[in-house]
Image 1 (cartoon, rainbow, N blue to C red):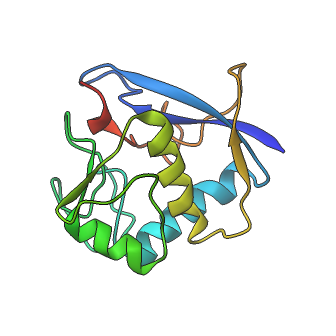
Image 2 (image 1 turned 135 degrees about the horizontal axis):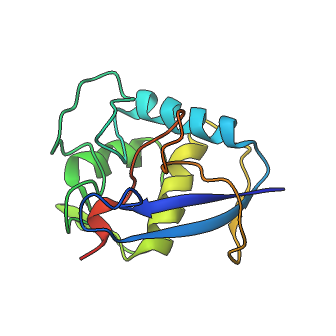
Length: 154
């Protein structure tokens, strides 16, 4: 198993400056996970970031198909919920028909990895303690330099 970070929030510290690095163990390479994220965006028309459009749909900032990308908005819209349910994604608590509130970074991580698994179904992952490992996203890497879960922080 490889170890890497999923960076949730404002890792670039150019907005509200709050983020959390979630250390995960995975059975795939960082390149495979990055590509699977992009592939799942294209497959579903949904993204967990707003600075690059991996859906190919030119969603634009504030789209209901972007999850937790706006300041203090840790929700999934009704439109995105409908799409995700069509792909068989499960949520930890009951889903309201209007929107789904993501209960923090741990749940966001669970949802994000389910999303990636739409394109990489044999991915196995778990959360770990926090020594130093490479990051899946952010911190100015050239392959997936975007923020996930910006809206989860106050």
